[in-house]
Length: 328
Length: 265
Ligand SMILES: Cc1cc2nc3c(=O)[nH]c(=O)nc-3n(C[C@H](O)[C@H](O)[C@H](O)COP(=O)(O)OP(=O)(O)OC[C@H]3O[C@@H](n4cnc5c(N)ncnc54)[C@H](O)[C@@H]3O)c2cc1C
Image (tube, rainbow over all chains, first blue to last red; front, top):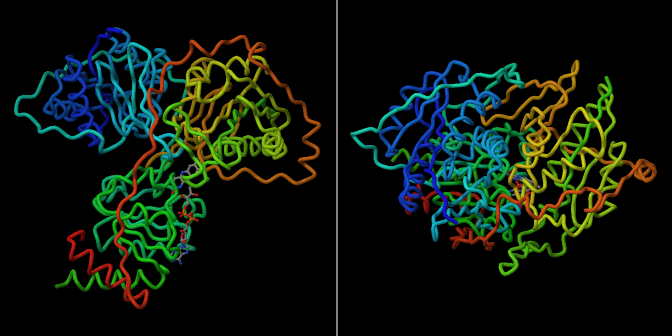
């Protein structure tokens, strides 16, 4: 079937006025798709006071930046965000709309897709053009299988994980930033307040090293040892789900299919068995190190380095040896 | 104020099963569970727990709604016994999850919900453990024209409104919506309570409606918006260099030195 329309990327901002790294990655991916289909690439940014982010995005290779800048879009309210962008999608339906598989992407794209009756593929770990079609690759059954899917509708939508696309080299000649009129209906949802609990000094998703603990840590004390190791390595602490459920680690630490997806240079898994749900969140790490007392734990099969042993004995000497060698 | 709550619950092969229990049949583009029982999708259990807590604090009539090809009655009974008041099962070959996508499923559930009658609050799990897509809840809300809040870690009904503590990547936010509304529930709500044997017995007498494809009057075949063109087994395995020593302490030291040597750290 012949389908028309451009590739559109929905960008987000990080820390106020910079484009989020996922959005820059999607500029690379979007460009690949646009070139593969012989069409153009637009990027849409929503928010309040996003002028700097819009100008920054314009340097990463899109053909146009559409800026929906309005005070009502300061904080994410799905009703307002949805209405703001729907008009744009209706007046020129894109061939594909890509967003990050982020908190915002996971909440907003389904709303857009069902409003417009479009096929949406979430949590993509790969997107490619083949035979004039856009194919989306995503884990199913908790990562026990990979599905290749496509939308049957003229517009396809997708949420894409971090580190799937590559950030293009910024250009000295940015494209045009076009402001778009924003509709502001009365929202049905009312945001009453926000509470930030994670230390955003070193967000898990961006840490070069992640030191994670599992059920075998046995309690909060174990996690203070992991924090010590993480800070020595300039990294962040993660966890599998049981420690989060037990309250040994904050919910913001959870790595896995229902937690965060991380791809650090180094991932250290301590007392984690390697369930598929956990692996879905970290199997793309550069190097994986496992410490586990069970020689048959599956985590060793997916690791580059391993020590079979009780972490209570292995970890202190490991951390101490790293500290000593760091001084040299 | 007592409210009518519908909890949507899908049966899935036990997601905690080992990787070997999920056979990837590439030819049929299907995952075939081997030797693992069906369970209620864990996030749907969380949704049911959230509903039971509302029932305890302000009163509610809870209907458990499940759609599938052939639903395990034992699994449904145990869930209902945890604190629901009625159940509706929508069953038939046409409802095999491998043949439905989120759009088709949401349309079918919407039709079933209309049969149940007026309801104030629909609770769904944030995503199913088999498809992992996280779409049906918002699809259902769109079809029924309801306000929707995702990723709840706490759900309360106050003065005709639903008040939700919503999980954010770095914290939480409090969101309110007028009823009727739909909320998708995250694991942070907590595990579904375990029913007593007595409750399981008593649950057998609770009203249960079973509908087939003909009762629903919705043909799912034309409703798909996403197609699976191929299914593959993932390859994640690496070559693990096991660091060995006489004592675990020594092994820890040696691991540190090996990582330094190999310039990993
Ligand atoms: C729908 C769904 C979503 C899920 N999402 C996630 C998710 O996002 N992230 C996630 O992590 N999980 C998730 N889970 C849970 C997942 O299935 C596993 O239950 C979980 O990952 C197991 O965590 P674990 O490896 O820490 O615990 P276990 O599997 O219990 O493993 C503990 C390990 O610790 C080792 N150990 C114990 N004591 C010691 C010691 N003293 N020294 C060394 N090793 C020791 C043991 O040998 C064992 O290998 C999800 C489950 C479901 C059903």
